[in-house]
Length: 168
Image 1 (cartoon, rainbow, N blue to C red):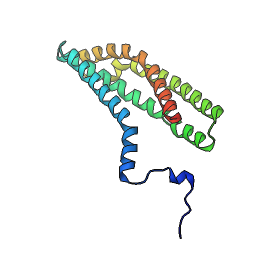
Image 2 (spheres, rainbow, N blue to C red; image 1 turned 45 degrees about the vertical axis):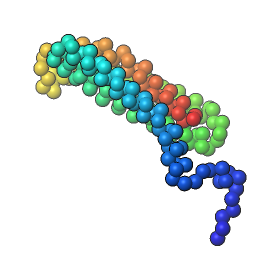
Image 3 (cartoon, helix red, strand yellow; image 1 turned 60 degrees about the horizontal axis):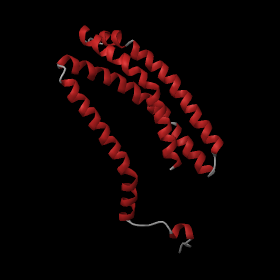
């Protein structure tokens, strides 16, 4: 049975090469952003390493705790991506539903951030309870007290990045 070619299907490029180019066009900005973020972390390690072993260990411990919480929060608000995509797939101009989803994701990021900021504030006792050295725990806790203020902006930025990428 022959399929009827519609104008829509006639415009879609077929073949492995076309799929590869389309995937590459979508992937290279994300890959570049990840590589740049790794470069920033590498430069941070180089600068902190000059302060000594204890400072490097404390900053690594603090960043690990903060990063775990941040990725958890970003994953929670990441559920807004399929909701936005579903609304846009249902109707091209689903402004009200998309706006509601983004607003609720921002509220979720605020609530999650408050809880995670509390965990960061209690970082010293938590790290000592897991068997970390007291001086290392104290330094890492001080580092977490500085980092915790970035929790909400970073999770909210994840929501906005999801929103922008869903809109294309």
